[in-house]
Length: 81
Image (cartoon, rainbow, N blue to C red; front, side, top):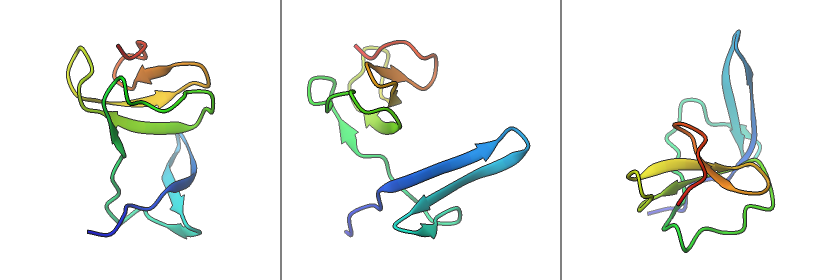
């Protein structure tokens, strides 16, 4: 299976649809996959604008994003535990 494309740019506003670009091309109509991690295996959250899938978060598996300091669940912005 080919490795998923890395997202390089995310844009959009409440009045515009989300636009995602990877490797210089739009991927709006393509499937993309979040990289999966366990809580203890998450990379450092020191860089914002990252999004991953956490397979064993205490509230259940969930996508999470880095705010530059912590990994937060996308569902409620609570820090991943």
